[in-house]
Image (cartoon, rainbow, N blue to C red; front, side):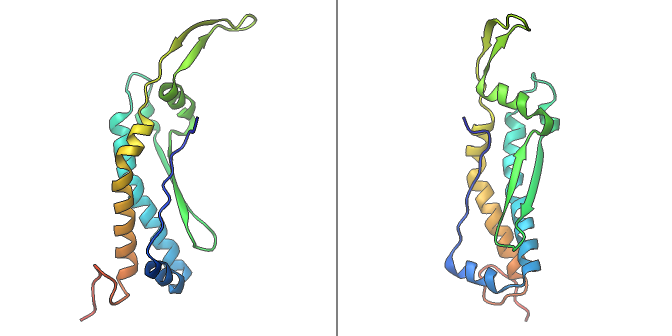
Length: 152
């Protein structure tokens, strides 16, 4: 039972070569902006599907973007912070158990998947947002990159 969703993006060889030649601080900033842009459609899809009858899960949605130290990549993590256990109970269902000392099972709550469908529905938009952001960030000063501004 996985509790997170990730997308691995591999670019074209030319883009990778361009990123290798660019200064690390520019690449790190481009990755940070691109991962933040990629998180937006996922968060929107998640908020739209989050059930409201289970506390304040919509308000608990958090996004964390981290770039590795050498600027070769990073990740965007989207979750529910301290309410993550509640989101997991809703997503996968759970048993209803009495308190100690007996801890008897008295029922079950059926699963209400909303996180996995949100991730699946927004994956393509997230990849597109990532690619467009990298293109904009790196293309601002690199002539010949498709979709960039040229200094005329």
